[in-house]
Image (cartoon, rainbow, N blue to C red; front, side):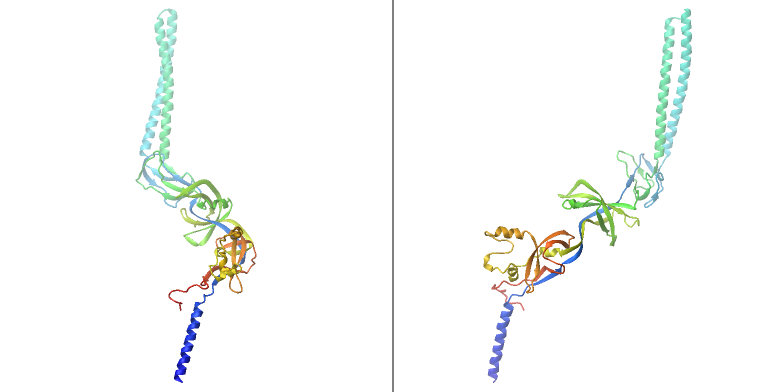
Length: 415
């Protein structure tokens, strides 16, 4: 009995081994991940990055050279147009004004002296004419008196010109004294100060920037760089939304106010500056912040949407794919993407279209031709195709079956 029992056990073990071998030898059935076709709104956007700036930013310099003696404002100071914001030591400019004023007074005195000389020479010329008529003096004496009179007249003109010149020098000196007090050219807020008291500034060919004043921080703009492949979709007036690192959970809004035609080439990449107008009434946004911008180029409501991944999905080679192609045999040379022979042109033309795959009841994928529209990156508008809301389209193949009749792994089946 023990011998018979041992034989039975061996036979059972052998049967289990053979059954297990053929069980694991069978290719595992492919599994797929699917998502449903939805209905709703879809928004097409263009993404870009840019920097926040004030709409009007004025760089304040100096028109005269000297040493800063006073600073009236600092960072974030509110200023009004004409308000003094800094003072250059005026001592040298006051001296120049006094000197120019003295020269002007001297020129006026010289004019008075020239007028007296002119009057004297005029009287002498008149007397000499009478004496010449009486024969008392010679003609040469009259000629000398005439020359003196003419010279006195030219002296008047010279004195008048000297007055104009000295008055101009006086005005220039007074203007330089006025420029020694640096004033704000606009109403705004000081966003940058580049000088300190005691620092010497020089007004040369390139005027140094002492202060930077933003005229109105409640209105700002973002200078973004849009790639040349997307710039045709961007239009003035389109709405835009953006986020900044300072407030990652908050989304701000704006609109496109300008698209500049000048190209910007960086490492052979062509972009175009697109300006986004932004309202900043709460003053949360600050100049220089980096903004991640999305420009809404198109929006459609109540449309069917399919996942973008469904358009990229292609079944892997195996029994399921051949079944999806209509049950063609392995020997007909068909691969679903390329076919050679008389019918190759028609197959290639169909392959050029877009398609997605639905999952049959038997677990095999079946292709469905579709025509798509706008996309938001994750979902694509379905314009045409035999799909309806709720259909599940394949986006990923989880397990790939082994080819029928193929050799298993040289290490044997995996348990």
